[in-house]
Each structure stands twice: as structure tokens, then as C-alpha cells.
Image 1 (cartoon, helix red, strand yellow):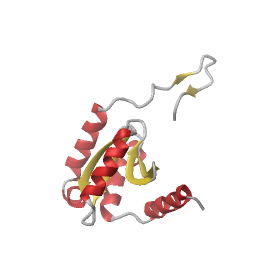
Image 2: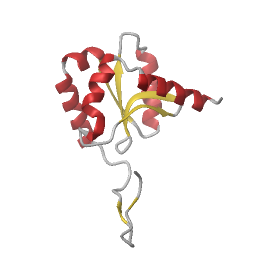
Image 3: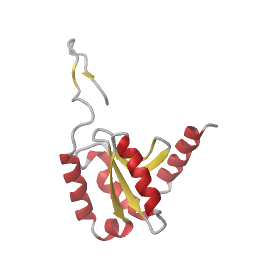
Amino acid sequence: MGQIDRLGDRARLMRNNPTEPEKRLWRSLSNSQIGHKIRRQSVIDGFIVDFLCPAKALVIEIDGDTHDVEADRRRDALLYSRGYRTIRFTNEDVMNNIGGVLEFIAQTLAALPDRWPHPHLSPEGEGLIGPE
């Protein structure tokens, strides 16, 4: 089993066993409630990110007490070099100020350019073409 397969399995396990702050944030981000599709526990370049908006290349992280700030800084720099922007919140932010967290996420999404051109109808009118 390769590293990518193991990361995919680990991401799936994390999706099935979220922390309380992850559950709380996901309730507000799921089903495009914030106006953009968000994924949980996505694998990017050998890392599992808490939340990802693929259309805007935005990574949303919730940091608990055990986060290594320097390792996070290196990871964020690598993801940035690949075109991703990372925003971080603490568990406390999510648990005690979910409205502020959601407002900041919405403002960040609005300020970021679209990663892909908008999909459009095919010339034959058979449906959308372009990224999902």
C-alpha cells in the first residue's frame, strides 16, 4: 500500500471521527451553506488538511493544543507555493466564536480569485463543461 493510499485511509478515518470543533464548523460549511463547496480531510501533496475549498484553493485549519507552529508554518509555505492559501483558527475560536469564524471564511472566499474559469454550457447544449 502506497503513501497516498495510507493518507486516503487516514483522511477517511479522520472524517468519520471528527473533533468537536471540526463537527461544529462542518455543520456550517457542509452543503455549500457558505456559498462554496467545501471538502473535509482532503489530501494535498502528502498532507491531510482539515477543510478545503477546491474552487478557491483555500485550506481551512483548526488547530488544537498539540499543533507544532513551526511545522505548520513550513507546511503552509509549501501549500502556498502550490497555489493554496491557508487560514487557521483555534479550537477555542470555533467553539466560542463560530459567527466570527464563518464571517472571516466568507470574506476570505469572496476576496480570493476563482481557481478555474467558470463552467459553461457546451455548444451542443448538452450540459456543463469545465471542472466540477
